[in-house]
Amino acid sequence: METSVPGRAETRLQAKILTRLRDAGPQSRIQLSEHFEVSRTTIGTELGRLTALHLVEEIGPAASRGGRRSTVIDLAGHVRFVGIAIGATSVSSAVTDGRLRVLAFERTECDVRRGPEPVLELAAEQGRRLLVKLGVDRPLGVGVSVPGPVDFSRGIPVSPPIMPGWDGYPVRDVLGRRFDCPVLLDNDVNAMALGEQHTGVAGTVENFLFVKVGTGIGCGIVAKSELYRGMDGCAGDIGHIPVADSDAICVCGNTGCLEASFGGGALARDALAAARSGRSPMLGELLERNGTLTAADVGEAVGAGDPVSVQLVRDGGRRVGEVLAGLVSFFNPSLIVLGGGLTLLGHILLAEIRGTIYRRSLPLATRNLPIVMSDLGARAGVIGAARLVSQEAYEVSR
Picture 1 (tube, rainbow, N blue to C red):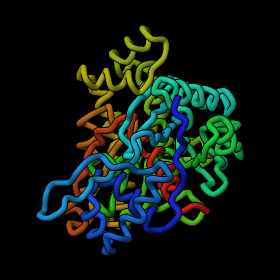
Picture 2: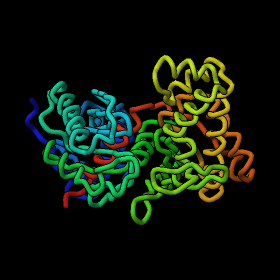
Picture 3: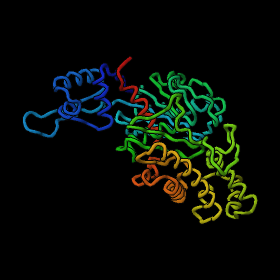
Picture 4: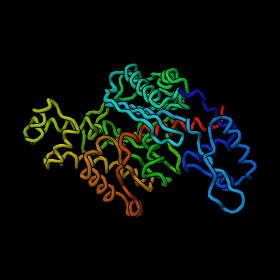
């Protein structure tokens, strides 16, 4: 097992160097000096201290630029983070290196409604198992995401609609004791947005929206390259924006919420009604075979050309698009990235969301607006959770 545990940055420049190495990869001393506009002596001093703290290491000489060769610096090879993404129906964990490259990953089906104790026990077991597999004693930090509103400063969920028993539960503190390191908690879509920003299609975009369409529907907002959480941490909770043509009862207690109209549970509900009424013989066959229907069954029926299932997806995509059109007019993003389980429904969903946004938004706001699917899948959340805690770990010690 590894025994050297890295320390923490002691100056703001040290913290900036660590973040630069995380996001841009190995850098020569000259590159760091030029990027931060400080002398090579200053860079050398700070790198010497970071080396003593077991946070960076030399990995070889830089390419010659004439004269004495500079040295290439990278984050220390033994720096490790754990990212845990707790979803409505699954728990995923990953161990990353200092640059947030996934070294080990595990995903297990799990209903978040089982409550915090068994779900967090599963998450901790996953994380510890991956650490042992990699020969790591203790990570530098653990980032965790959950599918509900979070008090970021206290590390607790706050009245999460689809997480009974989790309100006020000390998730951060419980996992902090299990892993013996700093732990940060955020909601799932914020973590996914950070993951997309770090290693996905949004890596070079300063202003974008990450929209998760799954059991719940939410939106991560990145403005000027910074995640925006809002006053109390609930910015982007678009799943509870009302849509005009729905009176479905939502788990939050209101009616007509977007999530109640086209979340994973809503799609399964509407598919079940279509199967039982005989409107869709194909869904009826799937119901008879499986005993119930899920969003995945709708996707199977869509792939087989079932017109009722196709219409369910189109109706849902239109509703999502109508809400996003309002956000486009308000925020004017450079990019919209769609993720979450329901994006597996594929091109029909993407095309309906795109078409609705383009029809309902002003041309000026959409003429340079790509709307794309995330290609990170289940790893967006764990990478984002690891990035979340890396920002804390690389900051100046308090």
